[in-house]
Image (cartoon, rainbow, N blue to C red; front, side, top):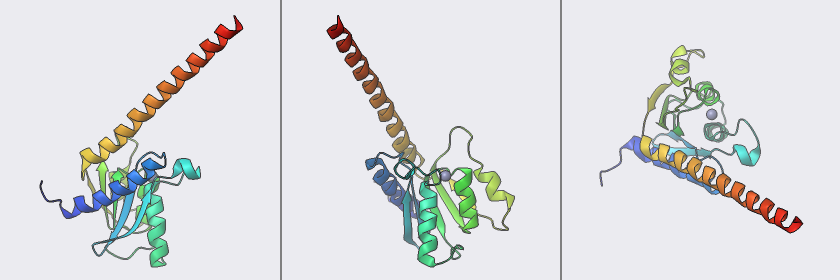
Length: 173
Ligand SMILES: [Zn+2]
């Protein structure tokens, strides 16, 4: 097997975080913050568990890193790795926290991201360099696997309900 690049190694850490979310029934998206070649904060999507619209993986990781450094402005050279292209909220948070480089895995398919536009807009007088497609297939497979099994579960649940209703009808007759 070929040796992983530095970027792929850190993306693997983000994938590991995503899988932790998966065990808790969340959409598997994971993120890590890297500073001086070390993972300093991890986060995974916890939207279902916390019922918070802001509980995205990137937000959790950025919040943890800010707490760790005791500053909303992360030190120069911080990088964010996330398994899926960030949404506008998370891209905004990366810029606000002054993340210098952002690596993401899978591309957002439905054009719901403004990643490049926000990165280049220089709204906060800060530019974040963005690199997409790191371990893209692995990151995308994690998500599509989750949605396939979720649809399967929904289908089974529907069939179970239908069966129960039929049984009930039979009894009534
Ligand atoms: Zn987000």
